[in-house]
Length: 283
Image (cartoon, rainbow, N blue to C red):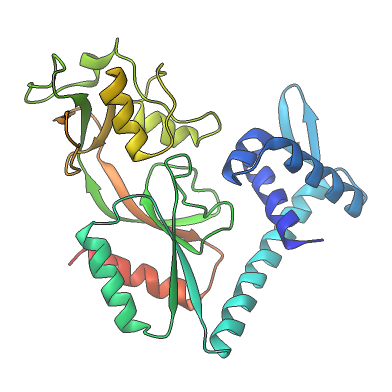
């Protein structure tokens, strides 16, 4: 069994949906389905029951899930210890925007002082993956925003920020002191692609099903508003850009800035990163 195939299996087992698992892994569904079929052939047993009602784990699949999680965690620990022994320890951090946040700058400075020989690799992801590659196994720790599926993850809140409606500067609502979600009921919103974490999509859609253009990145969100007059949400402290404005939404929950990692991961570099992040953002 290849570790990559086991990561695929764990994603399907946790999502219980091939489409969502493929989106989480940033791959198309057909090769994922083929990989699972090949794994079932290697194991000699069916891992998933597939029916019109959905996908469920078989008894064999449940056993393999426990073992696969342990194997993947052990593989991560081996990689970290070997790299440290070679004097080339690394940690991969996933980020979702906020790269100019003062807290992130304090965190980077503090972590470098604490671990001057550790190479920090940064992976910035688009808005379709709020875990920044964490679920897919592409990063060790994520500095991101909730809400998202926290299955198998440990999450600590660092800060909570108010959000507002992103509008064209000439929008009839643009000069209001504040808005409620009900004021935007009949408007088109920008949306994220199919397969995006439903908790994440729901939050940025104000908890309601919406219609509008599909976007993947912050800049695409702004352009959708500028060119199409759609509406969406953004952080109040983010500069909206020329021709746009942000009006506070007074009935929206705050946006949670969080640090997240695999709850089974015992890598001391990750634990140190989390501790340093908490201190940096609470400074």
